[in-house]
Image (cartoon, rainbow, N blue to C red; front, side, top):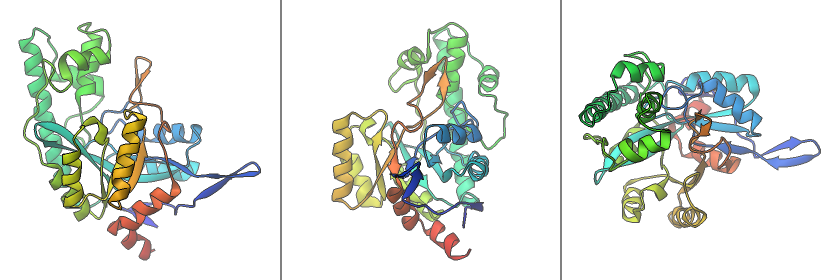
Length: 310
């Protein structure tokens, strides 16, 4: 079957390991060099296999540029790759991220919309560099692009981790965490947040591309009114299980999703490692079983259409 012009194999709930049948495991949140991860998409797939995962989602920020490479490697290694994206939005002055699963990655309008988001991200980066300069920290766009190994005009994103890495390399801060705490995190000295789309608009975009909108890491927002508002608007799932969620937070959002008949997803939010430190957590630190992936497939108009046509 084909998803977004990319062949994907069907999900089975169990696999045999030696003499045992074990549940299939999927990490539904990972980033690659297409956005602010440190590993190429194919490397993430190989790491997923080494971690004992049966599949993973590629959910780069505001781009689907890493999906095709990951799916190709997944074919070779028999690792299921879920096409995804993580869309950056703003509500109440805060960053809110909406995951999209099984979107049509070749949809021209969807790709054009993601390009608009990347242009906004580029504007934010420039504003951050200006604020850093005002604080006496000289970081140029060329230095950030060199650190990110990106070229202007490519269908990829450059983000705050790339700026943080330059701050570390130039000795302005000791590590990535200090870079965010002092300068780049929400409320820090060089943080800026230019106008972006609202999360409701991201939900619309994902659904119009045939995909399934899921709210990413709601525990980081600590705003149940926001979550309820998005549920009422048409959200289809909640990422209850996330590496930055405490156990009680995971239970809270899993219960909230179940009360509303939503899909409960899980993901590590793996970004690779910098300076020997893994961000946010290793692949597989949070995982969902095949039943969750089957729910996402059933909720995806694009997946269902692609499946029927093959």
